[in-house]
Image 1 (cartoon, one colour):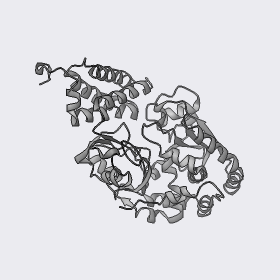
Image 2: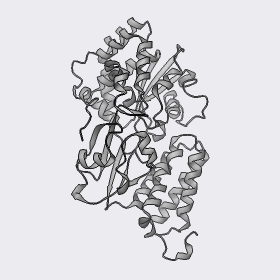
Image 3: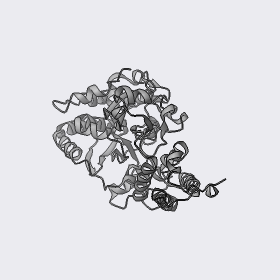
Image 4: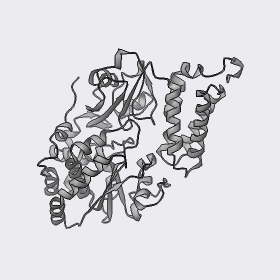
Length: 411
């Protein structure tokens, strides 16, 4: 297996002597031509939802008061790909943001970075200051006065949701909003707003450089281009890896790129897209890494956070930690998510303390299903995925914590 280096080549060039060539190449092409190349590329969002980027941008095409927000909150446990980009080449990310702002005709440009990323925050602020001449040149060529600002996150996982992030920038509590209206119609301070992930925007210079048709030759239908994978857990070579979508399997990522399991122990399970996705056990990891294949396998690629667990990992402790995270990170604005995650955490805590009942396992499934259907944002809709899949696929770990009396089992 060969690792794709399509994006990595640009990252490895580093921040020195960056000339923003692709930005001015795009300006010379014009907004319409750039957008046509984006359509040809079939790029989808890399933040987890995999929504077609061109379709989202089309919603604001004829508007003249557009806001563009680069979502660098990256609060999903196990995800650190965006941090890698910001810390290794902030100039490339800024160029990607400016090029995207040009295409959607944005007047305001924000990058929202999680507060814990202190080095990334400092580097992006410094790069914006160094690129003042570039921004002024962009304004002269387009006639659009562009405001560029770094916003430091409030330390809430829910700010990864675009509407919660918008509320946070406005200075109010970062609760999710009911949709519709969608941000593309009524977003930041009621302006039409585009919110895209760091990795998503970083594909734009590549599309402009080589053309959308060439970009679409990489990957597979529904998953074009490459994907950055955050590989961590019980793995010999953790780190950020770039792979071509649909061309490598999860097993190849773990045992070829990652070098295999620490101490050559047995693989127990893999979380393929962050703790909001369903885990996969050993005989399920030959699945190709793309959005459609992962869905068919019963999970999701999500943000690309691949967390590897060996046979020393206790599924009950893992599930309890995840439930603790979601119960604390819910914004509390919608009852199903707030109360559902609290109840799940309570039951898993009792199971972990050998005080649980067999009926708790079925209750966790039912509450998770209800929350996934009724919650307002992705946090509540996906919080139960990992927990339920752990109960279904690794039942022995849970059974050891429950009473031996079979009469208490649900029938």
